[in-house]
Length: 83
Length: 86
Image (cartoon, rainbow over all chains, first blue to last red; front, top):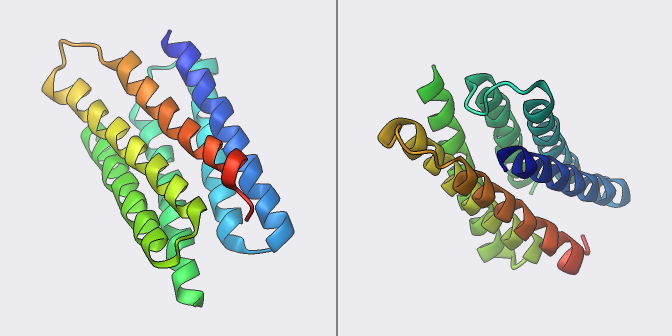
């Protein structure tokens, strides 16, 4: 059951990443590019979790997730700074 | 080390939720609302992980926790599909 959920999370993150990539392509606003990067990092992280089969509680996954979330904070900070 | 990584994820996800929802309150740009709600769910997901691992180590909350993460992402995906004219 857990692996099914991890796979679904990876696929959802990938789809969200692609949406933001499309918005970036049409607007050229790097806010969307950073969002795309964050969700694509999470998609790869989750997929690796399922494929490699290491424990879901492995701290390395959470370090990568922290980086993905920090990219979102960076995107919002950068957007506010440019205003 | 693990505790720091889990806590860092929870704090950063909470910060993302707060920043996105605050930006939505100012701009009323709906994509920010969907993103904010997604990160509220991801924050709960990270908090549940801390409960699962440290407060109730005898219990396995993984299915509940992962379901919460999936629902959070599906909220954003739904918003992007239905409402995402960026």
